[in-house]
Amino acid sequence: MMVGMPGDAAKVDRTIDVTLLENDEGQMLIESEPMDIKEGETIRFNITNKGELEHEFVLDTVERNAEHKIEMAKMDMEHDDPNRIRLDAGASGEVVWTFANSGTFEAACLIPGHYESGMHREVAVGDQMAQADVEYTSGTIKKIDAKAGKVTIIHGPLVNLDMPAMTMVFRADEAMVAKMAEGQDIEFVADRVKGKLTVTQMK
Image (cartoon, rainbow, N blue to C red; front, side):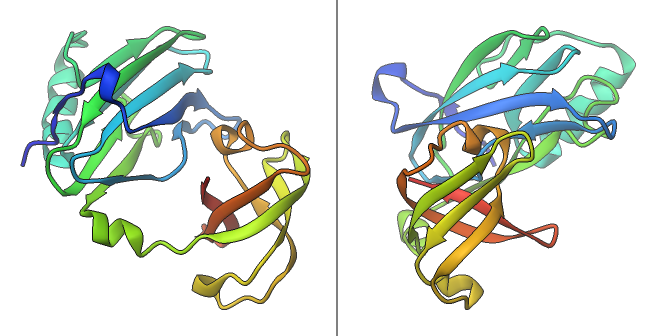
């Protein structure tokens, strides 16, 4: 199944900020809000390489990425395709893409060794009805600890987690924290990610 087609930059539905980086544990990561996308939606991926190494961002099926990863291991080729971008350390760029088909796809870095170090994440494309099932909770941001990736939110009931209204500390990735401000009223979705309560979507 094809992941989609190049999008029209003048007809973007929304932007997803993406950060490429390495962490102190030796992992290589693609950080962003959850890549949950409606079928037919045109997304601008605003990508920044905050790592110390060259990285790339490739949108494709899991199977095609696996095939290309094998090819890249034999010869480190630099492609010039609309579904990918390669960025030097500190550089930024964008990929504008229209997701024509529903399904589970993948964003990944296929430079040898990078995928194996964790540089890949799921891209879930569904119909509008499935996307509408996500239930947002109202909240107010009380405190932000950007260095620790934590945010304290005074919030209403979290129905999906069966939790009442209270004030709690949540994890949030760097891209999410960058959109937050203390005192800001938000609508958000939280879930358990690796055992930690985490803000996964926000508007």
